[in-house]
Image (spheres, rainbow, N blue to C red):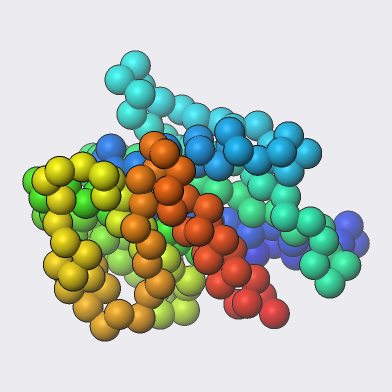
Length: 193
């Protein structure tokens, strides 16, 4: 839930990047961090293992300027992809304003995408949050790899009603990264209006 401070005229919103392990969540955040002007971003905090896997979360505050007289900032978080870190995944969803689900397009990761999406829905339910009332954008990452699932198949299992916006991405190259981020930010701001 967005934190609105009327005294300081600030709005702080939380966007969580969710998805299976090694799917590209941290890569998205790191790409955003490298491309934003220093005045628009805070410090990137990343708690990773020695194998560069996210252990607890990544965090990046991004200022987007003033909207209706309020300084507006998005706090971008990633969750650890591994299911055995579910307590962390669940905790990071607390107070979420928008979600980017980063799916790994590789055929061998197909079932992990489904498992991660189901896990996200379960964790949201534990906070009595309804996915129909939270902005969600799907990102189909790793589209440059040779052994990938078609967009049609991914849509069939992850977005069967075609109600969520989605973007194809190659996060390592920045393809689709800002398009995904802009869409989720726009959706979150619309919910606040």
